[in-house]
Image (cartoon, rainbow, N blue to C red; front, side):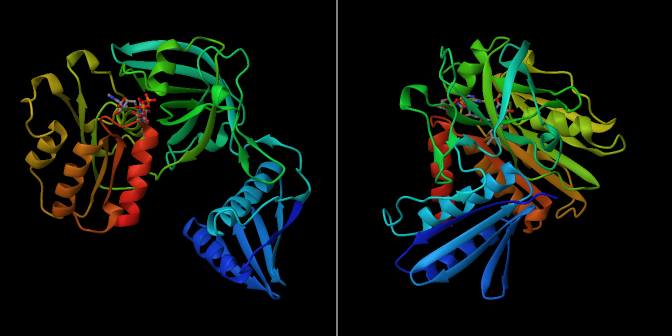
Length: 370
Ligand SMILES: Cc1cc2nc3c(=O)[nH]c(=O)nc-3n(C[C@H](O)[C@H](O)[C@H](O)COP(=O)(O)OP(=O)(O)OC[C@H]3O[C@@H](n4cnc5c(N)ncnc54)[C@H](O)[C@@H]3O)c2cc1C
């Protein structure tokens, strides 16, 4: 098997401390760290880096079986050295070896819109064609980052991996925005996938893209990400429109003998969709137009009214919704379920009044504070 490789040297005030911090950080992101013959070995997927400290220099040699793997490893090392070193102290990174000219990001996939379909008044399915989709075909990781260029560009521009191993963005007027979405359907052999977009009409770039998308439009896709669905005796799904595509895909893929309930909060009866679910599932649509104004969020109310055994060990709860409802549902779930995180995945998919960038910053700040 061919091995590609590249090397870089980082001049640092305290390279040994930085190497320790780098190892700790990457180990938290599923890298395997070990020591071999006086060097530190960091392995990520099929790629690895060999790091050594000598005379104020941290030297890194990265090796991978293919170019995306090599570029991903260069990015992991270079970006974390910059992040962990004192601000402004690392300049002019230079990699020598394979893959030294600028390239698209290692996990970037170009998608072309092939068609659109209005599923309900506020949900639009967009179909795409793309290459190398195999890694997206898994219930272990349903989510992707869509890289959406500004409207009206004749030639979209994409983020690139520079010669220094770092991401460089196109100029501001051509810079794409990134939004998280869920793959609703995928056919790897045909090279096609579909994503269901909520049309929320307040000019967020994700929703605006879905409104205007037409056959031939290009966007980028990176990922996949997220945690998978655990095997369980019984499932409880709770989602608003943004989590509905994920619930719909999981229901369609679960074994036909699976059992559970799905509570799906939508604006009104017109937003209901036909779902392909195992026969042992009860689906309940919760219409916001029938909820008392200012009352308990419908998903929380549904959760609180559930008649079940306390601490039911065979149950798995998967929930995704707006931030305020998420906070309340998570607090209620933590009281009724075992505290171990392996029995539930409850997440905030968007936050009323905040863009995704602002929402992500708030989530990071909350995680740091916790
Ligand atoms: C892992 C993950 C998977 C997701 N999958 C999907 C999916 O498959 N389909 C999908 O439609 N969404 C999905 N979302 C939610 C989506 O990423 C957010 O709704 C995102 O904010 C939409 O971006 P935007 O550019 O339209 O709006 P932004 O620029 O992020 O926000 C602009 C304004 O619109 C408001 N807003 C954002 N979303 C909504 C909404 N749904 N309803 C009303 N107001 C809103 C914001 O509060 C803000 O005030 C997912 C989110 C995550 C984290």
